Image 1 (tube, rainbow, N blue to C red):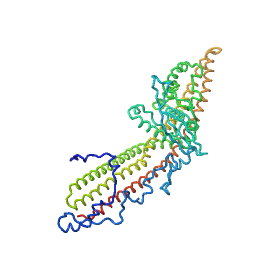
Image 2 (image 1 turned 90 degrees about the vertical axis):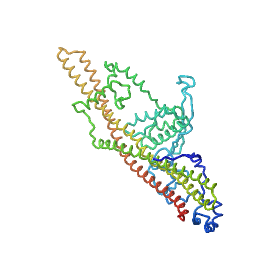
Image 3 (image 1 turned 135 degrees about the vertical axis):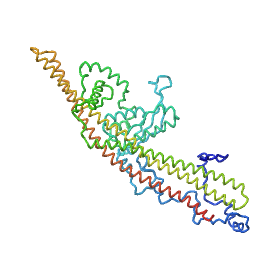
Image 4 (image 1 turned 90 degrees about the horizontal axis):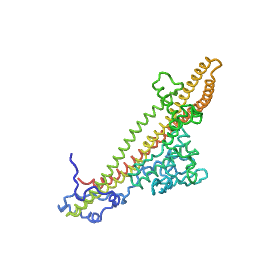
Amino acid sequence: MMGLETHPGFGSPPREEMESLALSDTPSDYRSAMSSSLSAAAADGGDPLLSPPGPLSGASSSSFLDPPSYADVVFSPLDGQNGAAPDRPSPCRGISFPRSDRAAASEYARIAVSDPQKEQDAVNALVPGGGAYFTYLITSRTRAGGVEFRVRRRFRDVVTLADRLAEAYRGFFIPPRPDKNVVESQVMQKHEFVEQRRSALEKYLWKLGVHPVIGKSDELRVFLQAPGKLPLPTSTDMASRMLDGAVRLPKQLFGEGPAGYVTPQDAVQPAKGGRDLLRIFKELKQSVTNDWGGAKPPVVEEDKEFLERKYKMQDLEQQLSTASKQAEALVKAQQDIGETMGELGLAFIKLNKFENDEAVYISQRVRAADAKRVATAAVKASRLYRELNAQTVKHLDILHEYLGLMLAVHSAFSDRASALLTVQTLMSDLSSLHTRIEKLEVASSKIFGGDRSRMRKVEELKETIRVTEDAKCCALREYERIKENNRSELERLDRERHDDFLSMLKGFVKNQAGYAEKLANVWAAVAEETSGYA
């Protein structure tokens, strides 16, 4: 395969050179001055080039092309920033964007993250000068009354908000928060990393704000509006929770006080938090029994419609993954062809300069001028490809967003499975407790006058049964609540996905058609100019 040689002066030009290049369709002075003498020069036999045609009638002398019929959609984004109306009237008249409609239904008209500032944590710093972190100015404006709030939050506060929402709104498709990537923060340039995190936080908070349930939550309102330090209870790290669970475990094993059973308050939260190791072990045992045991659990997932939707969500995730990869490939291909076209145009411009310097005949200068027009058209096409690529990213990014949302879907389904496992475990515990009481009562009846120690143990077990029954009722209600949340969220996801994908496809097709028309106009003008040559 033959490679391309790189000659001095014809290497890949920097992007700044392409951007600063002045594009003009106006014929050069020497061409307009010499056009009248071309026919005479050709008649004398000294000009090997045929007489070129005259200038194209009605051709624009501006470096910008006349807008094509798709110009009203080509340069318009999919929706306004944060769902708000743009500063100027939108050129997309007659086009309704579903995301803008959902944003209009939100309680917040604007949520913005800006002004990152570096601060020192003198209390928790291990060494002097350590413990540095960034805070961000979060500005929100409500639709009711248009009141604006400004608070400063650090990333740890965002983690706390996400944890509180995950506890309070189990079963909902809560948008996943940005990751706390420590390694990436060390590798990347500080300003670049901070800017990426700022942008990610703004998108995350806006997604929470437009959620029909999370957007009205007290947790989000406190995060956005409460001045000073975030009043939400901070998240406890896993190591501390496991340590608390290890301290509590001996009391649970020996049945000391209320530590030996699950309270109704604990039953509505997942066991994976780590504070109750005995409950974790019991639910793990119940899970193994469900999978490998011969006996059917007392309560099972019998919602066939949900199970079918769950499998469809798995298929959807695979299809989204494939479509997202192909979208990335398309963006890369458009970027490559745009850059290659621009480099080719600049190379032709340099070649034109060489031809002009070496030209002897007038026709050679005219030919060089035509080559320059082709080169200029190539640079214009390169810029159009770059604009097209930016619009392609805006539209097809919806695929990536929905692929990320699948994490929230899996988390909501996991909440449902966890709640069901808690119910199954509590029902198994109740069965075991009743069996123990029966055995104790039988053993006590064999002793004349009864066994007081056994009878006292029976009373303790009856109290445990009472509390466990209450916990089971709370767990059942929590399970039913999560089921309802899953059902409503799946319906909402179907509606929004239909609207978003339809809007994405319309915008993508119109932008492709619009830029194809612009590119065609660029080359059509050059083709018309050179149509008289053999």
